[in-house]
Structure formats: C-alpha cells, structure tokens
Amino acid sequence: MPLHKSAEKRLRQSEKRNVRNRARKKELKVLLKNMQKLIDTSADKNVVEEAYRSAVQKLDRLGVKRYLHPNKASRKKAQLTKMLNNYVKVD
Image 1 (cartoon, rainbow, N blue to C red):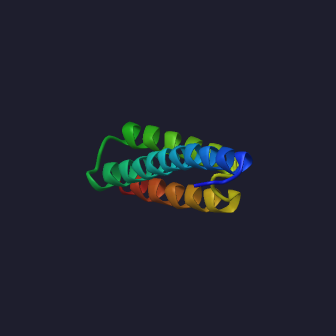
Image 2: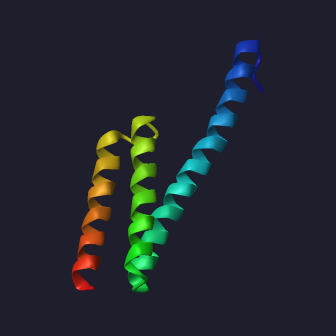
C-alpha cells in the first residue's frame, strides 16, 4: 500500500485508467472481429460498409486521443480498407 497521500492518489488514478483502457481495448477488438465476421459470412454489402465506417471512426478517435499510436491506427484503417475493397470486388 502507498505510504504517501500523493501515491494513494496515483494508485486511484491508475486503477481508473486501467479500467477505461481495458474497455477501449475490448471495444476495438469487438469492432474489428465483427467486421471480419461479416466479411467471412458474406453479409450484405451495406452492413459491412456500416461496420467499416464505425471501426474507422473508432480507430480515428483512439489515434487522436493517443490510446493507439496514430500510425498504428492508420495502418489498421488501411488493412480494413483493403479487406473491404476485396470483399466488394468479389461481390
């Protein structure tokens, strides 16, 4: 346990941030898996595009807020775009 008052505060802050970051990470994983699952099951083109838009929007937000490195967010968006383009081309 922390011995100083400031260390106690840092512990509280760290716990809150840990919970928040886990939620963000989980939400991002769910969005990316959902997109992949829709493509694998040959879902409707409009549904896949909507999933793509929501995933890209989330990646942009996480990149700006520095949860992800902006280059990693950009790379993930490029990968999603490539998946979407291949899916649309096949249909």
